[in-house]
Amino acid sequence: MGIDRAGDVPDANVETVEDKPDRPPPPPPDKPGTDGYPSRADSRSGAAAANETSAQPTDKTQIQKPEAPQPSRDTSGEQASTVAENKPGTFASSELSEGESSSKDDGVAGERKDTGHAQTDTYGTSDTGQASKEAGDLGGSGGREQTPDDWTTSQDSSTAKMGKPSTPTDAGEQGQNEGIRTTPSAENGEPVSADAPSGQDTTATADRPSPGLEENIPVPPAPRDRSDVHRKDDADAAYEGITPVGDASAATTLTGSAEDQPQTIDKPQPDPPDAARPVAEVGAAEEPATTLTESAETPGQRLDDQTEPRNEGNAEGADTAEGRPLGERLVVDGKPVRDRIDPLAAADVDAELVTEPWTDPTADLPPTGKELSDMDSDKLSRFERLRREGYRKIDDGLDVTEKGFDLGVGAFARPPTHAETRTAQPEVVEAPHHAVTAGEAASGLLAAGIVIGELVRWGHGKLTEKKERS
Amino acid sequence: MMPVTDDQVAALRAYLAGDFDTHKQLHRQLDPVAAGTGYTALIAGAFFEAVDRRFGKNDTNADVVEFVASVRTRSERLADELDAQIAERLIRHSLGSGSIADLEDAAVIRTQIILLAGLISDEKLDNAELDQFMTTARQLGDQLMR
Image 1 (cartoon, rainbow over the protein chains, first blue to last red):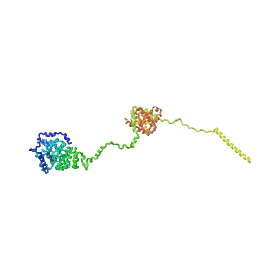
Image 2 (tube, each protein chain N blue to C red; image 1 turned 60 degrees about the horizontal axis):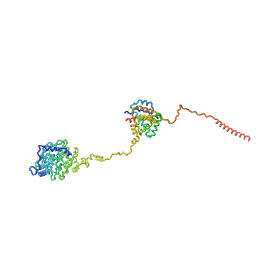
Image 3 (cartoon, helix red, strand yellow; image 1 turned 90 degrees about the vertical axis):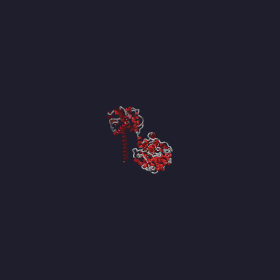
């Protein structure tokens, strides 16, 4: 991301710096054996001497620092750009050339070390003996005491070499990116010789925003709208492992400068060989560097990046920081923060894998009682048919209906089912009179003659018997 | 569109109750414009409800044919002017079969009135049943006009 931005920015800044007419000419090429021009061997020896002296704390007054106020830790990223704008005259073209040449040969290790240690020296509230180290660096690079112009030269040269714009940017994100990229070893990926302790330091801080460069920038801190105190607290806790390089305040200052450079490097920086690093810095210093380089795009994610070292081990965070999203890298109680915050995220992913169309599980069930009732009486559907065809709208409705009603009157008459004879009034039928007929009289007379004949015969028989007896 | 009015309901109820004099009186008082929509809708709804009550459960073509024939035998005028085919198609259409889209509007309305009179005469409804029938017919008429 930062590289892309850098690509968008024209390299005119470098040319602008070099085109400054008031700048001193570029330094002459390396001329070993020539008076006034230290050779590479001299530079190495000077760097070695500086390392030896750096082990002993020196007085703070040994360093001739510019009178510029102490830069704010969170504005260190802006300093790279701010210096280019406020102090254009300090970017000597000769020094630029020197910086370029020194970054290509091994003799520059001392100068690199100078930049790496100058960070702690600059941002440290207490001097940690880096001044003597710088003195050694200066001796290695020419045997002269470094001036504020020289300090700015190292950064400027790096910036100019990388073609990064030295113009300031608002809030310093781009400038912060430049601050990190200007680290020679990080940008060029050149292996640093293992025999140069200073080079090791430089390599260890390669992923960080070249602190040494920022130290040399005597620029007042730019006004910030962020709370430095709050960030310092987070940064102190996050980068405790950097303290071997400098004191706690130096680490804090480094954090502050790193905070302002969140989008600097998205790509993993080429890891220098571990053999070239101090053992103390492999685990401690690498993690903050990783955090800085993988800083998020939004401020909220920046804070998450800062809290990452608290939750994870330094070595683990360094291994897992690359190529994974932030939500997976942050682990709480052995569980990614993403899963803790959104437990349904995994379920959503599983749901997306379902490709079969959804089918109604109740489709095979028999219809409910209401549905059966509705289907049984298809009155509604029939009524819809009536609405479409049976309902007619006519203009002469009264006339048509009147004719229909006239015809319908006949429909009220019930049809006859059997024959009927209607009479005017009801009639009462009298009982018939019975009389003796001739046959009945003849039959009676016959019966009576028979009875009388028998009585006569019986009486004659009685009289006869009495006469005979008598 | 105006819904079925109370005057239209009252006029039809008087006709179905056999009070032809009252019906004629109310029929003359109806709005001619509203009669073209609301009154015909009320007649269609009443015919649909009467057919559903008569043939809704056991609807066979034989029953329909027998009913139409009985209506035609009730008077010589009906036997002459009532088209049995149209009458049977109207009944079957109300029962869910066939189509009457090709029939003229006047023939449909006139036939519906004649068949409605025959159906209600056979039902021998009392006043309460007739009121309930008219309420249902009015609701159906309103739905037809929506």
